[in-house]
Length: 316
View 1 (cartoon, helix red, strand yellow):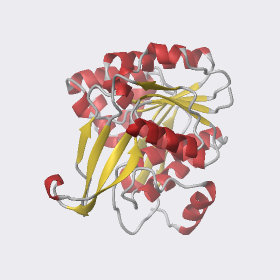
View 2 (tube, helix red, strand yellow):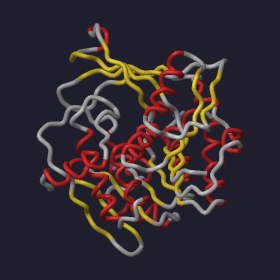
View 3 (spheres, rainbow, N blue to C red):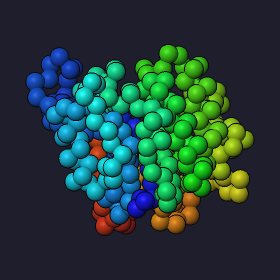
View 4 (cartoon, helix red, strand yellow):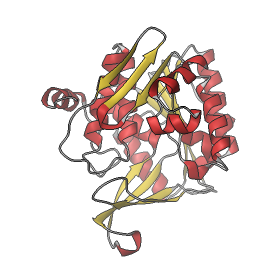
């Protein structure tokens, strides 16, 4: 199989408000595609890495549009299934001056919610190096959660590195306690865990970066990389511990997708054989670049753009 990284998740259409204000006051929206794992695939493909995406799309205009973009971005699409009974999910995103935009999802019982172990059984993991998963896929449905566990087991059988971004979506879980139980169990089966600092606190009950990292290291992770906003990210393994400085930007436009950009940078660094510190530095750079755009994946850079950003921006 000609791929370096495999991921599984839900791809959606996103409609982004053209003007600031409440949803009911907005009259025009631009159209894009979104989904945490798909954003990572787009980012890695633009950086020259070979990636493959497992998902289910509705056999509808949204699904076919996403398929076209996936092909255009050079992402492996052999493991995409079209479902004639369920629709492709979508959501609306508002525009704000400061902070996070409001997001209104329409994804219940979407095609991606029908992901199951069958999708993993039919997927070819041969020769791939990394499986990347997020907590979103595990939250979609019981069958998609089972697919996540099956994917981890198959990755282990193929001697792959497994990376995990909790990417919390509280509204998809029946309770925060259940969410923490499942996501921490998944994390215990992964090599690298990539929580945000607030996510880590919510999932572990710990207050500091050091305590959160130790929780996951003690549960089996080889490395924990904790996103800490503009300041950068905290890295801890059994051998090293350090804060990796973030990059300064003039203005934050939209934070949605920044975490996916960060994951893209870290994963590309790992695939390119960089040290953890170098990979996290790359993640910080892409994450900083992403918050300067209202789009979920438009500002994911090609390698030349990434190198230019890193060379031209100061760090904290």
